[in-house]
Length: 273
Length: 273
Image 1 (tube, one colour):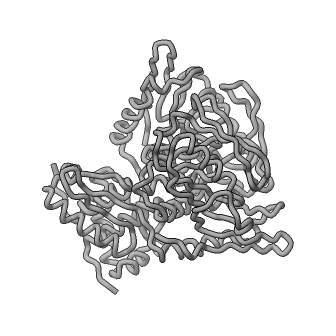
Image 2 (cartoon, chains in turn blue, yellow; image 1 turned 60 degrees about the horizontal axis):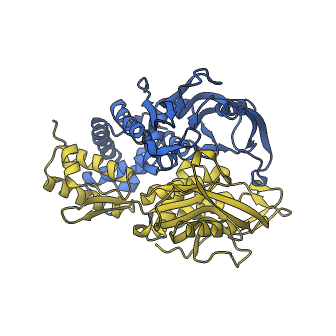
């Protein structure tokens, strides 16, 4: 088998690690893939690690010991995150997005893979990812960013449905009060969807009164799960009292004024990583 | 500003390109990011390109000319794709997945970010990506793999809804016959969702009679769109006559026998890349 140069080994190493966040690879894995000694791979890893960290492109971590190896953590820097959120807040402030009823058209933004990728990376960085076994969302609009958050953390996504589907087998159903519509709605999740007692991160695109998030918290009780955190892309500033506490929003929607065509949306400046 | 070594520049280059498939970066962009001359960056690119191609980790393409630059194409090799599909077919063949009614529980597979990532990459490789401006799916289960397909191609995702939502503004609605249930259903898409006359790739997780895919084809006519192709993760072999033609399935579900607990599912061996 061909021998690769250091440059080439590093290119491959970075590609494999960054495609599989949080997955632990043994040095032997790369030794075989790249036809090199473990000591050589170790040196390659140090070089790749320094380069990515220097440019804020995420962290390569080495885990010592016989069961150890190397893994990649997808992590946005605070600077990069704030620049990104400023830009998205600007895009969403376009008066052309206002829909009758005071809603804001956001589908093109939250369904854009590049944007969802960045949102997922930032959300993943807001929580203790080692305690998260699943990311949970409820259909439909939150799915892309929840998927990308799950990708960045390296755990499965779970999607609660708004009705019972025959293809999901036995389900656990709960009713919840949608704070924005004032109506009772149903949320269901297959009993097969998750292990009991797991740590779960709840992700959604938008929060108003927090009723949907509260529904997900209640649903998780039925699975004896620990809710590690709640992350939303955007929350409204009103009502200030939500039905859940301890949620982290990336942006605040302060108001949509249909008459004057003014949208006020701001990044959360107190994001902690 | 610090100078980076070739190794470090290559690590960063690969990370940025592979995070943003199909996005064209000028050599100046990397020259500034990495504080190096364009000629140096050009050499780095050649090394990274060869390493990734050698190991089947995708293609780095250079575009000549003043408006040129470099971009990354996320492309799975045929070997890697077939190994992956064999493995997934094995996972899905577990009799424990059979749900009353002859359905197969698949949510844990299609909502797994790593699996959805690979499925998206393989599906993206089955079509002429230069003619695709959007990926379209209909809620809910197809969203994760459609999102990852859109990511691999580097275009926006569009999600048709099964009902009208007030937050989407004016919508185009069509009725379609769900071949599997035999019932008329509705699909809706915001008028703002896409430019008229665009090339669209339709993606879904599962196809039986093809009614839903047909619904999406009809919906696209309302937007004067060209349907470039239809890709599904799994199709049933029966009925053999579908309501759409020219679709590409990654796997065939030949049967689910509730009595004997036997699931027969096979990769599509004639995938062309």
